Length: 293
Image (cartoon, rainbow, N blue to C red):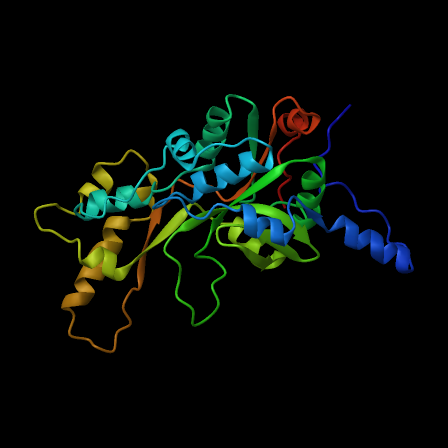
């Protein structure tokens, strides 16, 4: 029998009356924990850049497996920023700091002794899926979602642009709302979807670039010492040169770059976790990718 991804099948024709409204509400609602349970059970950030390992602790807890934060962090192999490095190495470290969804899947499997598996569903390029109903159907089956989001997208005008991507466990959904931990938050469906649909890039703040410029480390090292062609495609070296030149420009009225854009190791989307010996675990491995728009 073909396994159809929840949330991607054709919607039934709408019915009428209060029963229909109740059905719609139920289709858009599912909770692993109540809000009060999430307050009591959620794991707060366990270390620098360790949002992925933090999410893994709560994923395993939701699946009935207890591990220490230290075990989760070791299994996920969280990578840190090299803040004391010259600019080329600092930028390379920023592009990988934290963890990717691959590390979360491998970390959860190792920390659980092979009892848990994960399947990542990319949301970029844009997919033909209704986020909340898709999540609700998997949650009701016992899957535990973790969102990998570019927090630099969908920032309200006037607010500071966050400094990183972020992994958050999703402990429930309601109509047009997503409930997440670390931090405990309720975010609108559209806002979450925007963060889930992003190119793999990261914005680096102007001050973080300029204070690490060092004539002993030529800017050519930014691209020449990295095999990923995206460093050249994005012309990161050229962006840094422009930012540096702006510092010496006498044209005070010329707008200055606030950030440069570098490649990121992360992919935006949702990883669903389940026990390996469960029917939902088997189905997660069998379903196709979410269809493109």
